[in-house]
Amino acid sequence: MTKNASLHVFDCEPIPAIAGIGLKPEHFENIFEDKPKPLWFEVHTENYMSDGGPSHQYLEAIRKDYALSFHGVSLSIGSAGPLNKNILKRTKKLIDRYQPGLISEHLSWSAHDNTYFNDLLPLPYTEETLTLVIDHVDETQNFLGRQISIENPSTYLQFIDSKIPEYEFLTQVAKITGCGLLIDVNNLYVNVRNHGINATEWLVNIPAEFVQEIHLAGHHVNVIEDQEILIDDHGSNVCEDVWELYEFALKVFGPKPSLIEWDTRIPSLDVLRLEASIANRYLTTHKVKEAINA
Image (cartoon, rainbow, N blue to C red; front, top):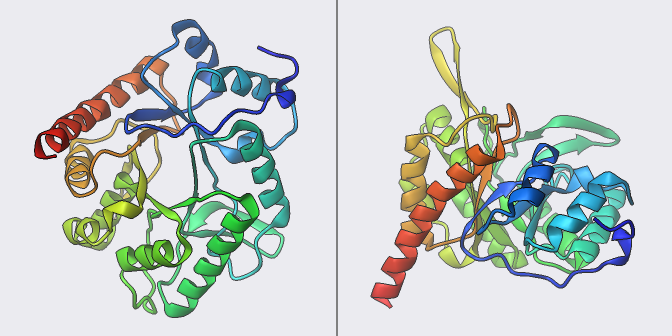
């Protein structure tokens, strides 16, 4: 690892349609020892907003061998107030330094004035909110000088005022701003179970050309007074129902870079690599089908 990580600037490397995993400090040494391939890593932007230190030394070394995506959780695209310029500046500095292949944020809000909430909170899908999100995505992309992708959130309530289906809301944001979409299949499954929405209808109404990336993760089933609610906790294996939904998503969108998210109860690197290998089997199947039909 270099002691002068801040002096190295990488070229932007597109991420191919293979599986990646979230980069965790617990796995740094295993990555250096094993050099697992094929693979790419997703980085939570907020974990690297300091200018130096061991975290950047590790990331610098990993970036030499792997493509990266940057995934933010604090920009609060859906906040009614202005975007946090300090977060934008720090994010741009990281992007300019490491040149990730993909950059993403959430269709949610998590800040009001100077208060930040430890959650990705849902939005009412209205014309007013659509205008706000479009303005914030435009501002973000213009500031960063890069396309970003917006992720569909997992939610535990729905607003009575919501008049626009989520898939239409996301599609309009992408059409008007030129941003991409990050389709989280686990989030969609959680919402299917929590709200009774139609997953097939949701997926077929997302234009494939806007989809830049897919997320996969585990969830927790919580039972409250005999009522089940699914919690998107990223703390377990991808369940069979989500794999089936992922397979349908690949039929609709074609092969896309696909990430295994695992952020709580973090397992060994081998467990994550096994999950990634399952995703790669689905991706390979659909690549072969595309080649046959070409």
